[in-house]
Length: 340
Image (cartoon, rainbow, N blue to C red; front, side, top):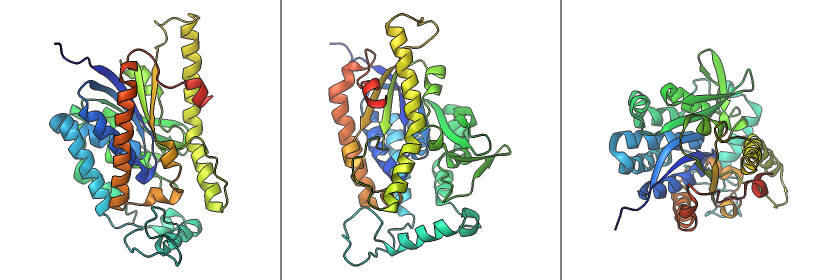
């Protein structure tokens, strides 16, 4: 009896703050499956962090090293004081809620963020993620020995263009740039240019994968809901939906372009020597993540992060059982129906 067939895939990891723990769970399950080989990973914000941490762990100790590195990273996130640290809620609020709307600490933080710029609110530019990344990642090792090709997305504030930091360009500042929300942090300056969160121009960008990798399969780990039928009853609901639309728009536009090229290839109007045939797959739990409010993206409580991790593992496990045979053969998601 021969060895199980392997499939080479690319990963596309969306950002979403603490909701990136869902992606942690997905990656943890995918790393368990030795039928999968990873060629390239494109990521934005929390997706970029997961990608770099996973690749660094794999560079040190293979697949198990990648799983351990992800667990250690999210443990470190939970260990930092956060808006849940004070454990206080306004009267009548559910204590078990993962949202922070009823936390006095969050209410004060949110108000200050609306009144003050990041430079005024945080003049020393203290960013606990910077400390975690320096402690967790040897960037010289990552640049020289990463077993997968990395593509990290950030937004150039001056030009409105995407900047892709490939493996050989990766630094701690590049990862921070990809996750720099302009109302929370000062823009990250790299090579004389200032950068904000990559989600504004690509959440994440897919094009580096078909330009610089060999795998035809792109597995998208989606944490930002596309559809939302809920009534927008508060100003915070409206702001959250505006952000979701903004962070999905460039991604959906790119997916429409991919769908168009794939239709032309199918009808043999263009040649596969000039354009790559791409199989698109999506791992998502939109029905569950849609239930979580925007403020939960700032919740670093360990119980919440492990809830998301377990949801990610279960979702990836179900996806593998249903769609592994599609890898290398066809898309397992209808691109036109989902993104057009």
